[in-house]
Length: 190
Image (cartoon, rainbow, N blue to C red; front, side, top):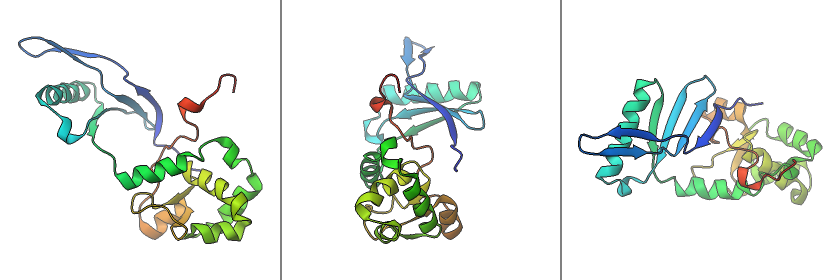
């Protein structure tokens, strides 16, 4: 089982107010992340070509405020289109119902103990029509990993356990902390 690198995320967590020498300014960062080691990270999301002088000043003030309280600050731009396409695909399998077949999940963990092509591994575990949703759920939740940033996932894409990927490639290939259930799909009472 993997350990997430973060404990919690809050969207637009606070307003930062300051005086820029001529007028009062304010900015609400996009996210606050509490990392697993207890540190804080503030994240603003804006494409580089959409940063005007006012936005640059806001990001600079936010970075200074974060430094004053020993938090990290980062700005992220446009995500990689290949990564986003793969994550959109895998997000279809984020719901728990896709991973309910524990017997298939156990078979997949055995099959993908070492990296293998996704379709071939699914066929080894059983009927691909039954196995693939469980496989994609395991990929979404980070139990299994594949190169989601290098190219679009396909039948010949290789997947494996997170530990086997690190030993073969020296790097994890699935973004850590991918939620297994999105906030927008939660139902009351569940």
